[in-house]
Amino acid sequence: MQLGFARQSDCANYIYTIEKDLQFIFQEWVRLSMKKYLLIGFVALVLILAFPMTVSASSTTVVNGTVANTMSITLNNATQTFGTFIIGQNFLAGNGVNVTTSSTNWNVGVTATGGALPGYMYAGTKNLQNPVNVSIDNSSWTSDMATWTPVTGVTAGIFYTPIYIKQNVAATDTEGNYSITYTFTGTST
Image 1 (tube, one colour):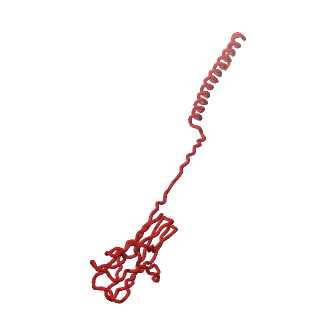
Image 2 (cartoon, helix red, strand yellow; image 1 turned 135 degrees about the vertical axis):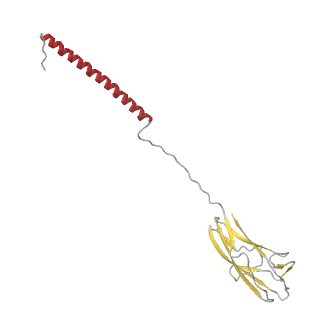
Image 3 (cartoon, rainbow, N blue to C red; image 1 turned 90 degrees about the vertical axis):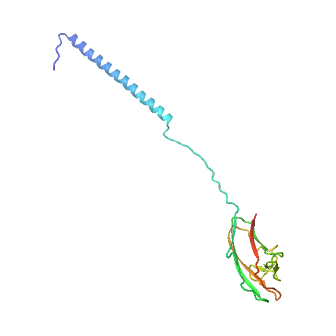
């Protein structure tokens, strides 16, 4: 396509007008682009400030736990029997004490009840002539329940101690169904 201009000045004016139009278009494009980029930059800055890319936070917690001072005592057999007594003989029975404890200083004591004389087997109001003897080794015997502590410990854990019970039946003992109750009690400090 050819443009025909009557005068050279008309051509120059046309080129000048196109140049001015292009310059205006370019300036508007730059101005609008700059607004757009400034707006995008501003939004990006706000987002970076509001939501930083690197997040750093720390928190500390202390976890505590307590092992309660506990103790449980169980017997291997809740009931022991000597069978039928024969006068003038010794009768032996056995049991075992199981102790589970978290204490590091503990003991198990024994009390005997059954009648007016602690440590004696009773049938109603009458007792056998000899006290019941107890031992943890079947050789060192005692009938003094007030001072006997068959199981002691200085560590926590699970412990087993055998208990031997011996009754001497005297020639003067009379017939009857005799019994005694032992209570094993644990204490810890």
